[in-house]
Length: 160
Image 1 (cartoon, one colour):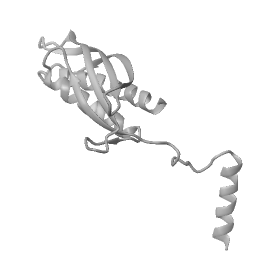
Image 2 (spheres, one colour; image 1 turned 90 degrees about the horizontal axis):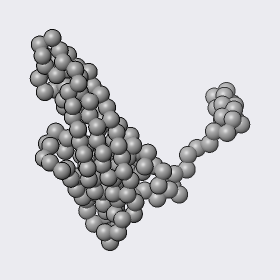
Image 3 (cartoon, helix red, strand yellow; image 1 turned 45 degrees about the vertical axis):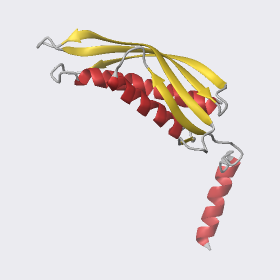
Image 4 (cartoon, one colour; image 1 turned 90 degrees about the vertical axis):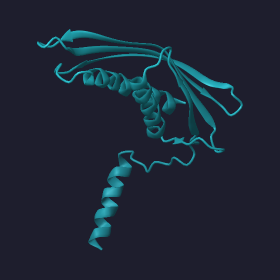
């Protein structure tokens, strides 16, 4: 009896403050498939990072990532430019600070290959490492800009 009373009081307090259970049944979620991620030149590390970033953004936005007959939207990412620049060096003369800038087009098509929307995304990130790990800092810098691109795509998909 006492538990029910406490539960009822807590419910009334939250309800009075404007908190309500979320009803997401009215929101139609899409089934996305990554059709392609294109680069002007071959870059295996960046391809891996951007594929993971786009996948994470689609799933985090509450949509489904599945390439099948259920797919309603196809994603094309065209990386127009990717610049990875060492801007600082360690005492051992290895690059320890990298700046990465990316400019890409995020294109979503429907099943009829009609463009639903196209957004241009430009991001820049900087990563500071120790300079002792060889090319690891370079990969971490690309992953850092990949996280920023993922956040931007998440924002785009949740606004639609």
